Image (cartoon, rainbow, N blue to C red):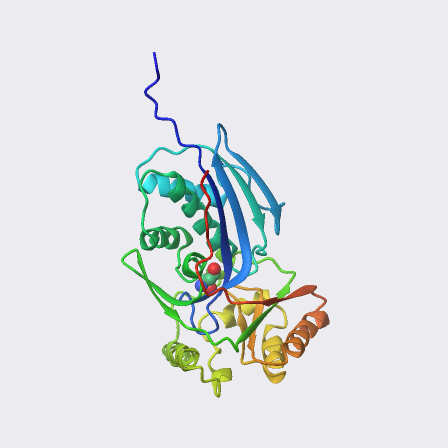
Length: 310
Ligand code: HSE
């Protein structure tokens, strides 16, 4: 007798999802920009779960059911009420882990996108984004991971509302990545439960002016707008030399120097003299005997994922 079990169509999915730099100084949990470091994913249905990983952090990335790509894949199927199934997953990762460059946001978005390709029910990008933000706990990395670009985002009743900011082509970006591991969990645990009224006002003023100066491509006073009182002062205990690195980077001509995401990466926006800016920041880590690497990044302005089904 023929089985009534519906055979899953053999589907192969290829995707690339960008990493991101978030917060941008005063925009805690709000601002995020996609950058050209990618998580490359390949997936197909399989008779058992098989996960191959290469690239950045390959030795740390889990190969079992609790792999973040696969657990996000499962979340999608649970959400649309479809049975879970095993896949063969290959990950080629370019995004340094636990460095504040959006590796978990990219993994979550990647897992959800794979599930959407393979599931019967196709959720919209907006629905998918809201699931991604509920897994991640905040929307600022998953929004650029899914849509690209620089975005202001916010969670309202479990739904992500976001708005794109156009970025001037003359703005450049470089990351000085120290060899320090900081999990977002640890970096969030150190934040206070409440903030001082003056500090809140300080951030509201700067983030509003920062968004306006991106929007109007007015860089005159931009150097004042990347300052923050809500998270960097608490998190800098994990990044020896942080204050000096910001000061030196700014003196060397940066438009803004800040802790990327929850750190420890120090990100610099600049228009000229990028190599001097990064060198002065790296010199501070040299003084502290902390090894580092410098990566010159490009903003990713469009949605990058593509998929090929066979
Ligand atoms: N906005 C988040 C934070 C980004 O600063 O904790 C980390 O992924």
